[in-house]
Image 1 (cartoon, one colour):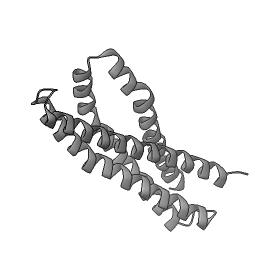
Image 2 (spheres, one colour; image 1 turned 30 degrees about the vertical axis):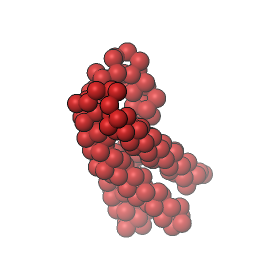
Image 3 (spheres, one colour; image 1 turned 45 degrees about the vertical axis):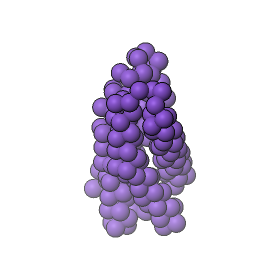
Image 4 (tube, helix red, strand yellow; image 1 turned 90 degrees about the vertical axis):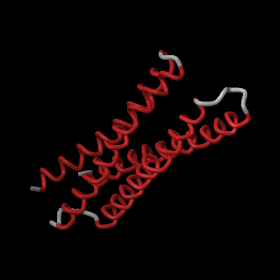
Length: 161
């Protein structure tokens, strides 16, 4: 049972961090480099629900398998275990906020911007708001990624021989 819990925990962590790395450093830059801006935005808008779903599922699985593993007594350091669970909960909370709060707001703003001419004052106002939300989303995803790297380090440290 412990092997299965550990496997699911590690798999969820790898998928979660890997999806952030791939999307942020490979897919998104390529999409915006190759496609016209509006089409690139449409494609990324279609990808985001799946991207965040991966985060939610992986976060829940990582936390659940950590808790189950702890309940069965397979932790070597309670302090490192608690740190890991707290970091995972923060990561999941940030991912949920980015996906369930910020993403719908940016989608609404983007839709309204497309209905306006680019020289209208409202378009400029919305564009600024969109940029602010986008920066916030990038920051949150960066923090989730860096915390994920920290979790990998904690696991490596905890498993040292």
